[in-house]
Amino acid sequence: MVLQPLSSVYTDQFENLDKHTQWGIDFLERYSKFVKERLEIEQTYAKQLRNLVKKYCPKRSKDDEPRFSSCVSFYSILNELNDYAGQREVVAEEMGHKVYGELMRYSQDLKSERKQHLQEGRKAQQYLDQCWKQMDNSKKKFERECKEAEKSQISYDRLDNDINATKSEVEKAKSQLYLRTHSADESKNEYAAQLQNFNGEQWKHFNVAIPQIFKNLQDMDERRTVKLGETYRSFADVERRVVPIISKCLEGMVTAAKAVDQRKDSAIVVESFKSGFEPPGDYPFEDYSQNLSRTGSDNTISTPKNEGGVKPDPKHSISKTAKNKLWLFGKKPKAPSLEDFSHLPPEQRRKRLQARIDELSKELQKEVDQRDALNKMKDVYEKNPQMGDPQSLQPKISETMCNMEKLRSEIHKNESWLSEVEGKVSTRGDRRPSADVNHHASHGRESPEGSYTDVPNQEHRSPPHQPDPRQAHQPDEFDDEFDDDDPLPVIGHCKALYSFSGQNEGTLLMKENEVLYIIEEDKGDGWTRARKQSGEEGYVPTSYVEIAMEKNSKDS
Image (cartoon, rainbow, N blue to C red):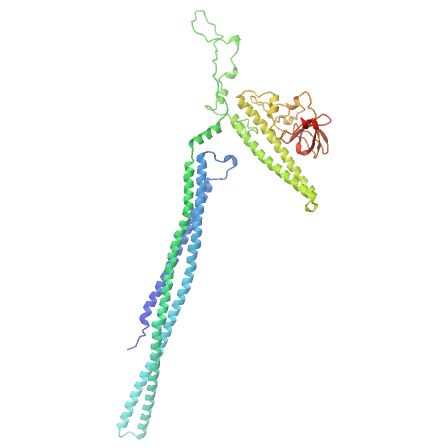
């Protein structure tokens, strides 16, 4: 019977622990894969939400900004949804960093630790098996030596009892017995030593080494279980941390929904499409039977004839043209888009002009600020030449002044049109007041370029002094001011700091260092009215001249 090592009793358990720890690592990696797929879903969801918001909230110009409460609320909901998508991205990022990344690092550490413990267990088993083999070999040797000794003993006894055996044969058998016996004793001692050593190593193996290895594997598996529990909690905490912000997003959506006001939207529609026109009056009866001869016995009640033989007013004749003007019930005639918005109804035209004036005023203010900054920089360069050349700023200053001149001209032109519209709206279709009124209504101008358009027939007034044929549709707003017979008195003089081309109608050409007479002060629009020594009058930019007012004028 061959003796089997006791270590084989624990071999199955060691293999079971090997399989269990491998299953634990596989489960950890399976959960890591689950977290990865979950955060990818969150990333895809957030990306799709942002694309959805971008699709339904395109870039808009200033004029296309939503005004209706339903539109404003919808765009508010889109903004809240965009914030909600941001929170989903936060969830994905936190899951990737605090859960998935942590699990992958821990999985690598766990594999290394498990491999080390299993190697230690295999080494312990291999060492015990080696000790057992040495003990088993010594035992087998002892067994062989004992059998050989027994054979020598039988041979010696047979020869010793045989009377025919010679003395030399007996002595040889005796010597052989002694050698075999001595070899068996040595094998016995060696076997005893190996057996004692094996029993000691086996005790250490099953009472110290293997329990310690099993305990290390148990601790490792327990730590894996604890780590899974922590990542489960972290997984939930990531969601929990964004819940308050998501709740605010949802509350914002509810608030936006409550802000929808149907009456406000209706008022915006009314205000947007209000034309300012009065409803058309009654059309008179047109009697075409006036020229028919009637007998005295005709008792038919005839329609009264027009007194004085006045023909019916052709303006009140019902025609296709008149019907087309009834925009409320008929088709609105198409008109080309004009710079002065004269193709629009008065109220809408007024709003568009006012919006343009506000926009131009903002641009003008930017140019003014830029001019002031450049002038300050120029003064600094003049005081400290090492910082820069003052003349290098002159082209930019001149460009800024030119831009200011253009903007002021555009502002004044639009203000002239606005005054015209406001006069039309206030008088409900009456013609505008006289030129004197136009003069006072244009105090808010920003430049000398503009136009006064007659409302009923849209005819443009021509300037009184040699108009350019190419500018027949660009009337001059200074016509009324230059129609006065008596020249304005001189109230001061000025010196030109820069040259001015005076290309626009109503402006005055001047050269640098030229001295002019002032006949009208700047009224806040950036323009001063001046007169040359030759008697030519016009407007010059106030910022282009150095003004010296007469003392009497200042006192007045």
